[in-house]
Length: 130
Length: 415
Image 1 (cartoon, chains in turn green, cyan):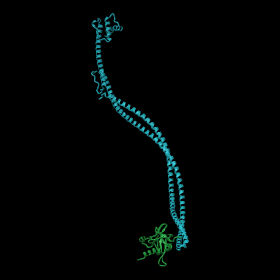
Image 2 (cartoon, rainbow over the protein chains, first blue to last red):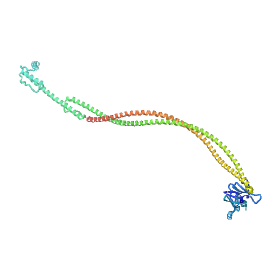
Image 3 (cartoon, helix red, strand yellow):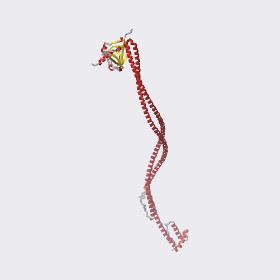
Image 4 (cartoon, each protein chain N blue to C red):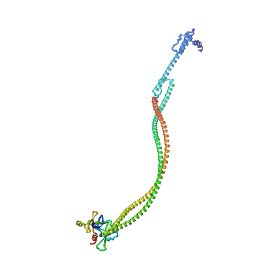
């Protein structure tokens, strides 16, 4: 009997690597092939440098997708669910974004777990006119 | 009277000739004896006529006495005149001797004796004195001139001696200088020979240099030709590299799409859960391959970049080589021109050095002859110097003699 696992998508923005649940990503595409209005470049995770990859994320509106611009998609990994932890309250209070939901231990190093739809939504909310 | 006297005189004269008185006439004998005394210069005795018996003898005696008286008086008078004349002659001689001894010829002879017989003597002495005066005057003038001339001769001889000494010194110095000049000529001749040899060596070296420059120019031509070929090769290489770059871009694009595709495959596999596990493994493998390809293309890009930089540097170097080769050829041409000029100059130098060598050899020979001549001149000058010293000594002696003569002549007063 093996422990249940979670499939996470690891991507890099700037110098840091983040993790997301694979089901949050519709697909992975190239930034140059995406429409400009679909791109989400600057988020709570920071500003990407090379901007080579885009993680296509579905929104609440049907047939509307957003592409989160990242520097690199590191890969997909299966991690035990025991290594997935919710964000401590103190950390949640310190982090201003609700997109960071927890952290996952990968190779004995903590990696922030990001809710991609929330992240894209926050960015869309921040960019929308008042 | 003559008739009377003749018979009387004949016996007396005959008796006188016979030297013996007639025994028959003692008075005659006495008279004869007396006359013999008178004839002997004895005039002091007298006959006593009274003692003569014969009147004729008496008269003869008286006449003899008278004659003796007369002769004695005349003899006395003659002796007196002789004494006077003798005294005048003595006085004249003494006066002349005194005048000569005292040297006073200014006056005339004055005698205490005044006798007509002395007049010629006085006149003669006067003429002698006049002649002496004239001689003394002429001798004085001659002595003065001699003194002046001897002084001039002495001065000239001294000057000549000094000049001869200076000349001897100058000739000695000239001889020494000529000796040095001879040594210098020898040195110059050797140096000229050395210069000629060095010029020959330099000429040979310059000809070698000319050949080397020509070879250098040939090498520069080859370098320029090679640089052109290298430039063409670099241009071809650059085009090939560009093409490789294009191919690598395509490969990279394909790898990127493969990576993207593998990512999406892995994503879908992961979403499929356990069912997509194998699919995820294959996708992961594909992605690893794609990443390897991208890594390789990245390295190739880096290499291409390095090749581009190297090609650019090589092209610049080739251009520089072409430019430098062109400048080298130009400089080689200038060097050839310069070396040609240098060769001509060295040839002229060599010829000139040879001519100088010959000239200096002739100069050395001439200098040696001059030195020989100067040595002979020096010897002659030395002899002349000795002669000048002798002449100076003789002139000094002559001056002393002239002064002595003048002093002697000064003793005679003629004015």
